[in-house]
Length: 51
Ligand SMILES: [Zn+2]
Image (cartoon, rainbow, N blue to C red; front, side, top):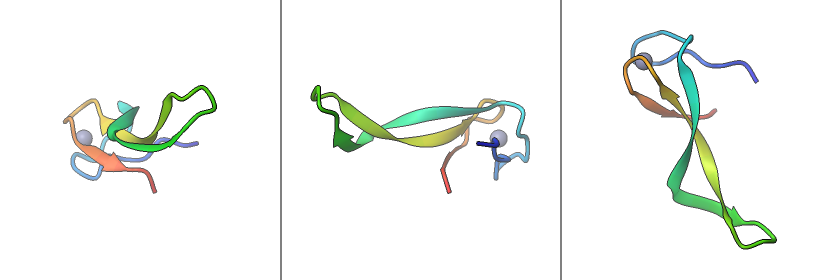
């Protein structure tokens, strides 16, 4: 999956994939939660939703 551009600062070379720990999507067979993924800009710290 191509990395998006930060909507705040416009850079795309330091975009990180992070887990949104406040929102478990579902629980795996082992009972561990699977979280939604978001993008975080390592340049300005802006966090934004995956499309
Ligand atoms: Zn940014």
